[in-house]
Length: 165
View (cartoon, rainbow, N blue to C red):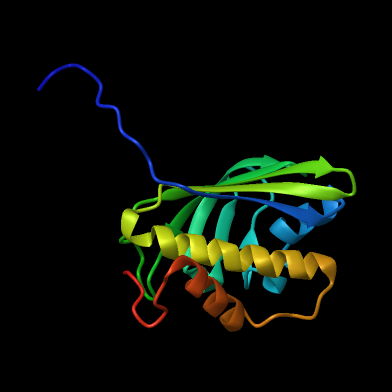
């Protein structure tokens, strides 16, 4: 074994989406327990670095690593199957950055690393959540998550009846 570093690449999924502002309102939708269900689902994000993240009924758990209202939120992302006390998947990281663009807000989302077998599913999922977020911010009628997911599954070539595990 040599002493030289091994250089590797990490797969990630990222999006940029322009959303209706102001930035404080977008931050509220990303972080407040009352707003999360309108686009993401039931959950809590403790409002501080080191705070607990508990989303989708405990399916996703993590720890806030960066809390910089109203511009940057980052946290660890651990996927748990029902009843598991430990995740069978590697930890990943989600970062959400907000930048004012006039009356709108640019959201940059990065999720990494993403295992190769989950790349398309991850992209489909985030695309769906961001579609729902944009609709909630615009005040559009609540969309069905299932219909939105089905549309994005077709976009990314994901077979919803045969998801990777």
